[in-house]
Image (cartoon, rainbow, N blue to C red; front, side):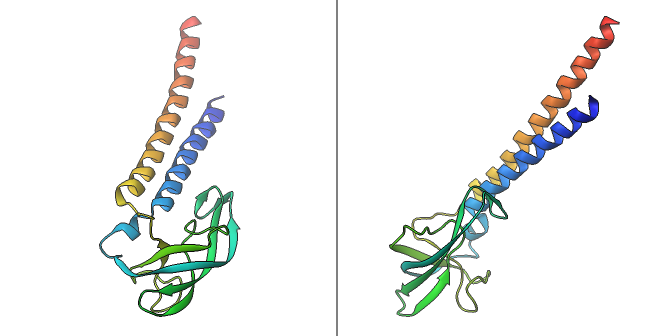
Length: 158
């Protein structure tokens, strides 16, 4: 019985951590830092998308990874791969931005692409990760505490 509770507690802790990391991925806190300012703006026309999920390195749920042809305000035209979850197959003309140059997804001189209305957040990203770990930890402690309490009551009855 003790080992079943331990496995269950670990599963709750792991689930909380995975959910927290999903929020971390969604809010992309690294894109919200000063090291990743907006470098260009444009309009994307989605050309092709692939679906990832329901469980992937990007978290839980379905994540679209789309190729798009973008006409930038700077005058250049490029085909880019938008960050996961930023574009969908239903998008026709979407305002987009490029953020920073520290991360290379689209080749040299072609930083990551996000929806223009997407606001990455360091606070929400880290808060999601810490919240998920906290909720998972509290759930795990609750399971272990319940088992310990039942065992103590059983010993008192004897």
